[in-house]
Length: 218
Image 1 (tube, helix red, strand yellow):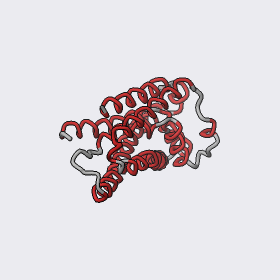
Image 2 (cartoon, helix red, strand yellow):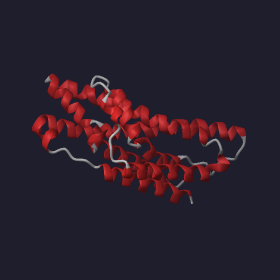
Image 3 (cartoon, rainbow, N blue to C red):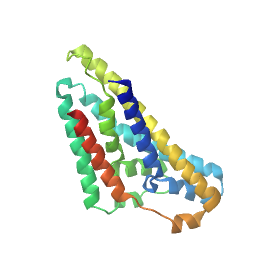
């Protein structure tokens, strides 16, 4: 792939992380609540770390199966089209079903990593990365032999982890900056009065990314 295309895809991964971090549905208000409850700044960073862990595991859980699927080099185009369709379906579902999963409200506040993992899975956060990840898997130079397939799977496995890590770091920094600002200067009143919801934008973003994945597959 051209270096500009690779760079654009990596920037898209980071941009998606920032987008997820800004979205309160990915958990930054919980880190503010933890800091306000314990009256310690360290509680904010500890909560952010747990949220980041859960988000990273959710991203990896979605991306790693696709790294194994990519050994089917001859079906690369079909896999990318199918992945794009899956992301579009998730976006349409979230547009139709506007209710938040009840399971998230049953997770104890002390289990932030688990909550973050479930929230990312329920909102299709990992699926948003799939078309970008598949675009980073350059297989044009490889043949379809077993050696190439093994090399491809190893390479794409590492790429999946790198994508998940880069995305999670961007998400944590974006959410952390907002959480720090709210905790330091605005406090609990901001969380109760200025809550914002971007569910529709989130669903439309999934659809847009899915269409992008199908377009690049062609």
